[in-house]
Image (cartoon, rainbow, N blue to C red):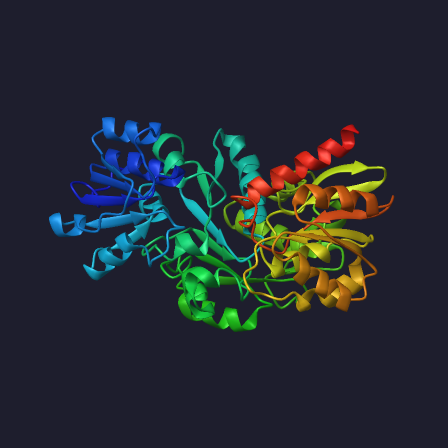
Length: 460
């Protein structure tokens, strides 16, 4: 941890006692800040709240008392990324022109370790995990490590405070929620895997707002840094070119005009063969793109082809992201619970050549699923739908001409029915195309229950 002066002696309000709120509070205390922590939940019996109180933090739970801002002056409000800007405490802070930032802003400014950052609508977690493992393989040769942190589930502050030194590396996954609240991050390498519409518009309100948040990953880079952009998304690329001050490199699924591209048999960097496609373990063209971005970041940070090959030939997938689970009676089962939108499901469905029994459904956000009809026709032999969107997905399947459509209420019944329909040689794919919040707290919880129900089938 660097002893920076930016937060020393400052009066800071931390909003939200999640894992990142707890971690950034401890980091800010080490940096010499005076803290108040507020969470709408009752914190009386919360052990983390008690630990912070014992360290001198004023802890206020059970409500959002906006009159705090009238009683004293705060220099910063550090909010949980998921808390909307319409929250009364955030709105009051903005009204009083108090800077509102998120945990990465604090943590990365205090990091001794250099860092690279990845964002995107889809694919960012897999890209981060691949990059972390490639860089860890490389850095281990000199006794150092790469850490996957951020939106992937491990707060940056925890690693900055206790673990990462100047010879290590942080590989940071950043969501649009986190990026909306940063003002001066400068990664050595930044990458935007892709940007799609209809993602998190309930939070950002407009697509332009969503794109602007994503562009914060490169907006503060310098000419000595690198930015990797998707050559195939030309409209986004034009905005990225205007926003970045870094050296721009591109990647493409098809076009050799890009710096990195998918060739006939190899992932290529110009004329250089970086990795044989047949040796990459992850399925699907989207994972070739994720692998390509990981290769780009890692090679810019010093890793060699031996490090790249060692990881890409063995990495079987991140949890809940087109994750291979098991084979039952000749049916391969995949958990893609991270598929919280139509675009993610599109990527998953087209990843297999085998006939698919698709299990999908979840929170109704007001979308229809007609954009999946052509994919259903090409890849899906039978579909099981559940949750709030079960009838909407079934309607799209009917339009696609799928003869076997089963509608159930919940995920448990969905797994049972999908298993009955799948035959040897098929893929049973759980790719919900929807958020989890109608029946589960998170997509991780949803995926864990899917895996549990599949394991129960194996035991019968």
